[in-house]
Length: 425
Image 1 (cartoon, rainbow, N blue to C red):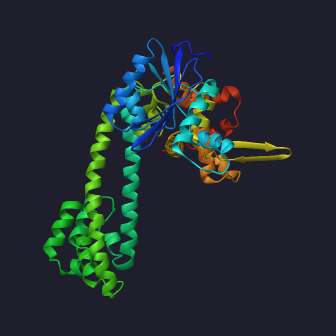
Image 2: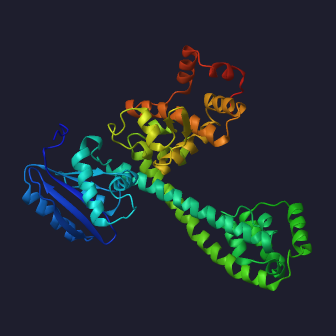
Image 3: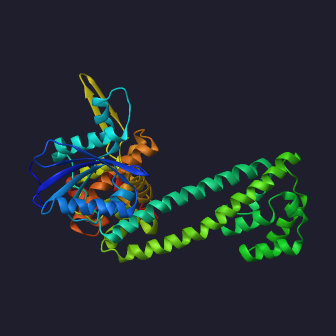
């Protein structure tokens, strides 16, 4: 079988089905029809011993391993061995392959290991060997992914607090301020009910607002009067006392989460500034401190990973899927994709409208044609990916004026919209 010039001759193929506790594998040596079965425990010393056995048994060649993941404990354990060539198989691809042979829908680790080995042997030319990004890029990617999860946790907690307060203490939504703030957390910890707030002394309330919010004497007196005259939304003790116990629990979670997010953001920015591509992604309008690292993580450091911008558009799910059968023509959005990457491009497109005149004009054109908000953002992200890809590939900074000049040279319909559009603030 042909191999890439950068990969030594393949002397053995392995299909490895990953699991939390044990990995079921199948191995076939080059030139042999025999398929060997094995099971590995998810323990570092066992994995190292197995890799050493492969090195001893197959010296001078590469061992190709197909596994159903592009990240995780098993891949991280195997990625540092230069004679192992890893081929991540997308779960959906393996599922479709499994259905072709087992239409009943049954799933078994041993069967998946057999299928992975078969998939690798017969379709190696359709798989791309996995090449890890450099350590700095991988660290940034892990941090931006975890940051998004923490932001989702913060949103979930503030939504819960907001819904709860509306049921028994709606005044707190105004008096505590932004719920995702240390001040609101302190307010709700001290006074989780209207009754407790009204029982607090004038000095206690004044000290709180003096520490967290600047109020004029008139505003302060007006606030005191509001608190004194406020009436509870409900007098049902079952409701009030239940929420008075639950709300402080959510507040404590939020109080721990907020400073942790700040520390993560600081560390992420320090790492991002050390990356050789940080100036490229910083140059894009609307990227900012939050989204520039996301864009960097979406592309990575391997300039050979994507052969063209269309591949990035498909990988991210921004490019739609077209299905044709006879006279039927159906276009829908892509479900099998890297959803974190898709969200990153979607968010960047949304922010870019406020900083890039052509992006704002293009979005407005689509909206005027009746395109929905999110569909218009995906279309805008589709155009941005072509620009991002070229700047990333060539290591060049984005220039808004240069791009607008290119639009004029091509006679783009956007030029007329740009002439009549006010430049966004």
